[in-house]
Image 1 (tube, rainbow, N blue to C red):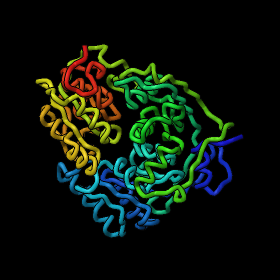
Image 2: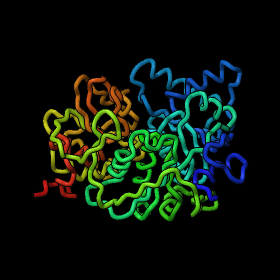
Image 3: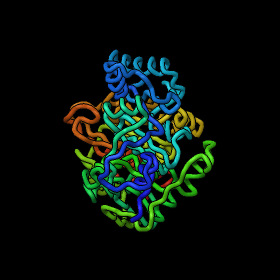
Image 4: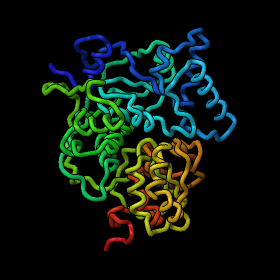
Length: 429
């Protein structure tokens, strides 16, 4: 019996010819990604046990991103702990405040993480990197401590869900709508501890930004990770970062690989989708209910990339954010912020009445830069809409694509982005 991409990567990193779902393995980690929220807890575990070492300082990437610049003294202390550890251990891959942004988006652009590798981090959206054809997953602080100390982690080999998407996405429909539709179909636990492997001609035509959005939200369906096989698009993306094919290993699933579930989806039938409170699987077609909003948020590791900001700018150009709506745009990294400025996107946002914030996780997890108050109603391009996720427990959070967020900000209520033409100057008839 053949193996999937994920099984092949795990076999190679556990020193075995093959692995099977359910098997417990000790897996070598190529990279450990650290940020200021979960890493200090892992470091304390190591220090308390006299195990204060790093398995390889060249294989650690550290990016403070959740609460930066520090919003209070507690946040400042967590940042100080991460930074002092980085300096003490000689960790070179440190993307400090003003040089980084959201860790997952920073990492994907460095060229450090490569196809065929393994990555762990104390953050559930580490599966983001799976779009590069690697096995990337979030772990708890205890496993993170082990990975930092030994460069290894225990896994139960997961089964795989094959998601085959064919056909063309219609104008106004984005990869975010696609992944929300899949989660709506299978449920918030539909991929519990499964690898979500994306295939099909729709995926083959999709750019890397769209693929990152798909794999990023595997965890919202309970998945262990998401993954996309390496192809010409992946190779071109790596080449643009100075990485050539001889520097990584490409894995593809065997024709007779075992899949727990197979999902077939016609992309042409996917519509702009909004996940209603309080779970990402509660998806409905955008605009079917005229729900007034108080906040519109664009950003996060799911949808704060340059393509997302361009989508927003196309709709906001020549328009104004509705009275009574607070719109916040958060470029995912410092580099994306700079590019958006050079392209004139930030000026469009400001002219429309939106606020542009510093690259960070920010309000996505209710830490700062737009935290919701009692009874606020927010439409967000982030990944979770759990009770209290972005602030007060009484706030309502609706998840959508950046285009849908922008259209809703202009209308003042949840709207279908297809009502706006691509130039963003006039509403369509």
